[in-house]
Image (cartoon, rainbow, N blue to C red; front, side):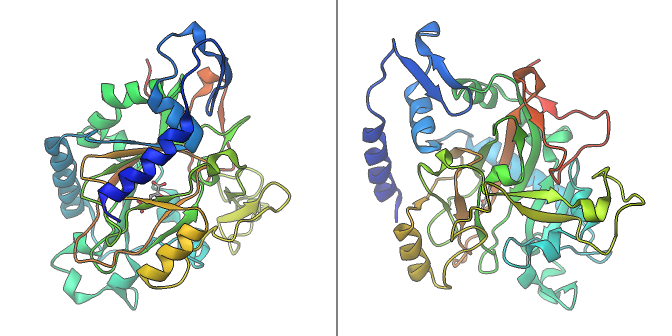
Length: 367
Ligand SMILES: O=C(O)CCC(=O)C(=O)O
């Protein structure tokens, strides 16, 4: 699918949004039912598209200079901070996810730092394959989960007016940033990200408030693993939550304490909503692009190829995934995940894997 075909699909979705009715009650995904005539400019067309379909595309959100500064900064971080000869950790979202992330202090400790995770196919016998030793960055799957916590291009972007204004436009009233990540999706070895809902990992109470801001740093195409979304799925409940395992941590859920068992995995998936599942959770179908694409279309997913600098904003309940990179071109992206903060009456779940040290708050975007 090229961008033209994507635009045809987006046009069809836009037609379903209909006309704004300024005097009626409006149903915002994040705020619930509100009377829209209190604020004449709300909701914008973009916001109504987002609320109806669960995502919105914002073209040219970042300039070529901003994109380049993020890519150069990541290259610098990899050169100066990643030492694969000390230890190498793999990131994966397939049926080995619990084995890879669910038993790793390096993963848990990445909450407010920049840690580096390799592609499984860049490794042999627990070490980087020799061809990656002189080009470490080409072996990486992702970096996470606190790039925004230190000064530099990632933090400047997170705090930029354009990010804050977009979140305001989409209805967030006290956005905070629990996590950021940089996905490399390397040429040929870049693995799939299986279908998931982000709120499974960034769960809030009493309602879900997670929004993903997915920024393309390279052109993202069908062949190099663009994002696929299932429009409208954000109206469905969260089906599973990736939680800290009380069998491992004991009652504190944070420290290994006396009533925990260190042989148990640190994190597990807990089924929610009476064990409801979807056939695509944690999966991508088949193993060729043609087969996978047609199976995904059949299940209501659509691909969203993007140009470098384009942004996709989507809700935490929207089903999304990316297929493996079948091309010779890497597909880098930078993601921010935001949720509503306590001033909006929202609490971060104590069961979430990602927890900051006591007394350290998430970055708040409104002062
Ligand atoms: O970029 C990808 O491949 C997947 C990204 C994703 O799942 C996310 O941003 O939540």
